[in-house]
Image (cartoon, rainbow, N blue to C red):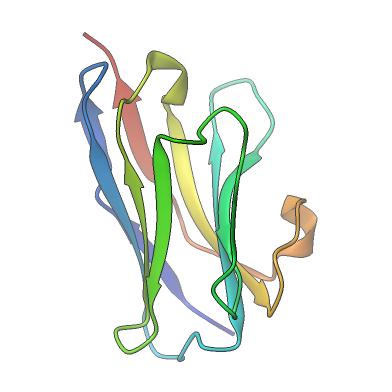
Amino acid sequence: QVQLVESGGGLAQPGGSLRLSCQASRDTLDHYAISWFRQAPGKERERVSCISASGGTSYAGSVKGRFAISRDNAKNTADLNMINLKPEDTAVYYCAVRAFTCGDMAAHYDNWGRGTQVAVSS
């Protein structure tokens, strides 16, 4: 229903920063919750952050204080600002949406982007 494209990934040094963006190609996002998930090689996909349709946010404990999620409904975008990056943040990051409220599990989400690679290494 919603086409999503992630961008902004790349290589960063430990302690560096990256800003990821999730762009919806056509549909408006005002009634969707938007989450960022990540998946490292050999590991399960985990949710790192979510912003609900009403603007409430949540974060995984491992990224609290370092990552910040935001949305711009007029632009149909949601960003994930990442600072103080650590090697363990290395993963493919995915944008996903579902109706209204944030779900904890990947299975709760209806639409996914293709992902953007984040690598943190010195």
